[in-house]
Length: 166
Ligand code: SF4
View 1 (tube, rainbow, N blue to C red):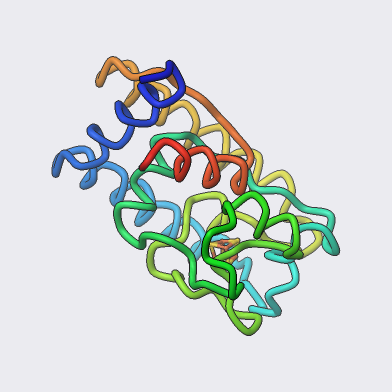
View 2 (cartoon, rainbow, N blue to C red; view 1 turned 45 degrees about the vertical axis):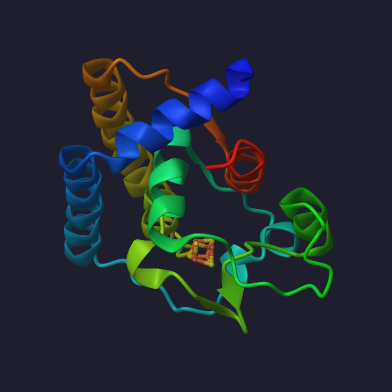
């Protein structure tokens, strides 16, 4: 097993632990509450999930991606050649592989980075504060669990996880 695969397996094993899943869910619930109190609202245009045209990228930890994949599995297949890798598929797509017909197909389980992003003017500072608080908590969780902390681009992480069998 490569070092990379080892890392993904460690995140997957951690994500499978009920107490860890509960912590991660609780972090998502808390950001939802913060969003409700913030006054920012998603217009659900789906534009920000089309990363190339919108000029946006999502970043998150390997642990979050491993947990996400344990919840929702593979993205909906939108290519007739199932043998192609996720990376190849994604290179053809303008955006997130979980976006279907302009909408998020995994809305209840979408990652923190999706929940906290708003295209509304004036939300940047609020977003930075939420990210900072989330990352501090996430790093602490990794330390508690003895996990390596890695932060990565969303689709790259999905492709790596898949390649590692996670
Ligand atoms: S997971 Fe859902 S909300 Fe997040 S980028 Fe993908 S389609 Fe958009």
